[in-house]
Image (cartoon, rainbow, N blue to C red; front, top):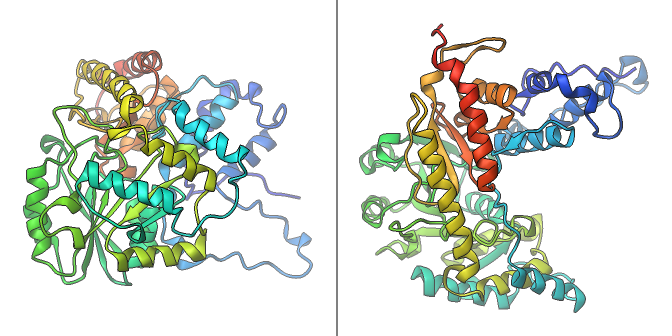
Length: 472
């Protein structure tokens, strides 16, 4: 008989079975496969957590199977953003009216010109393997884009196209880091950076930033933390999760520090470069004096061009680093989708910074940002750094920590507050602890203004009783 109880204490989904309890009142309407029973609900929860349903010992006639995992894998934490997004989606599919503001995915359709290029690729039979590094046509287009928009010059053999910018980042970390190396990561950080370092047997070194400084790295702190083991500094501008944009002057200060440490490289994640709000401007780190040969630049098509499902990113840099990235890719996935690459060529043909299609999306993101900033500033105790790019708010809600919520319990941290807001407000958000700052919660505004207005009302309503709740 199978044991279907979901008693995991190390569940990678931060809400675990508690969110299932929060939605218990609608469990009769759940419809993952058919009308569920408590047993099937438990089975679904177990599957989400990658828990093996352990069979009774009597069924193992030949002895137990060794289910141990690699220590390297065991050192890696699962992505909370992916887990929460999957969980919120499951609740919506089950009939729970959850507003999902957890995923970093534009709500716009891929621009029609790009979509048509992909469709035509299929119709014309462009469906076979491409070179491992990507088609020459696309790599040449990427080189033109980087030169014209970013002021950095590469040749096609200095570019590798991958199945998303996440793969490009992971391969770059694996290519340059050795066991015992240190990877310097400013916090708040994108959830995958520290785990990529651990997969490379490197040590993530987290440098905190402050909301009062718009979550920007202090150059003095950086210099104080560099050691002989420091190999990589990861910068993300515009930032996920904060939306902060590094001014050119600050990047120049950081570049001067990097220049004094010959072994230190910079991995510049520029996936949000086109989603930026004037007067803020984007500066590619590799364009700074002396930084071209020290910088590996990663970008892609998911965010600016609303192409998340097309899975296409790229890495550019000095040939010996990029060749190493290509070597890893050749043994992992080989080349990216031929269809997506044709679509990407069309995307880069839309004009400077994506042309009118991207400008229209950025205008909508800015309108949403302005609405949310104004709305949350009206809430007691909330602290906000107004984002200058991307489509996230990273809001300090620590004012509500330590308060007792009736029928829920104590709000102890960002994770318990997110559970509370899912329970009482039916809004899915991501706890700041996932990004290295437990005082905050990340809100994605990659949803319609109408949806965001409804979410704000739910959040305000849920927080109101906490304002007067006693600290415990």
